[in-house]
Image 1 (cartoon, one colour):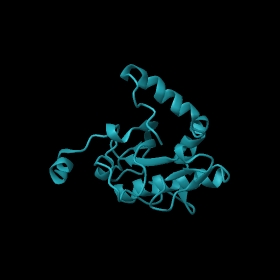
Image 2 (cartoon, rainbow, N blue to C red):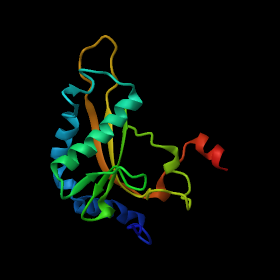
Image 3 (cartoon, helix red, strand yellow):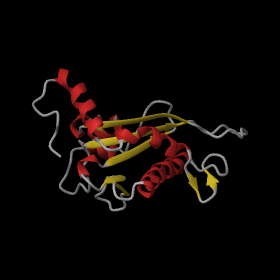
Image 4 (cartoon, rainbow, N blue to C red):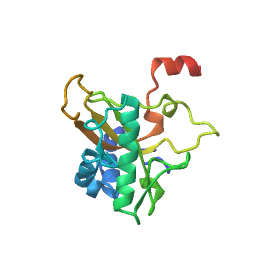
Amino acid sequence: MKSPYENKNVSEWKQITENLLAQNPIYEKREELVKIIFDSKICALQLGKDFIPSYSNLGFFIENLTALKLAEKYTTQWKHGKDKNEKDIVCLDNSDFSIEVKSSSSSKYIFGNRSYAQAESKKATKEKSGFYLAINYEKFKKNNLEVPQIVLIRLGFVEHSGLACAKICKRTTS
């Protein structure tokens, strides 16, 4: 996808992003998407209630169950991305609207894979710019039977060139 921000003034970026979000078919289903994430179950087991995986595994489950449930409900519009060159949620009508899902137990930040912020190489398997669905969830509390909650869900468009790499990433790539 050609950058929608290319040769645009920074003052226009907010409106460009809002227009991009409004064009994505998932945007009109955002209320439903929240319900899909909250109600995610594996078989009859509910995440965080019936079993408590590690944080990285919980993120894996949230990311994949969100994609699977969306694809199950909208079979002609979405599919779960399985190939390494596909985003997590693939839009069947227009791949530009496909979505990468990231999650974190941080209350407000997403700490993505460092490889996303590194310079694109010819070996890159999927487009790093595009739509991202960020899901933040509560940490599990020891000896507490309360189910951790989703605390923040954001849909946005990220330009690869705007991603910041952590200091350790900069040291290992220079």
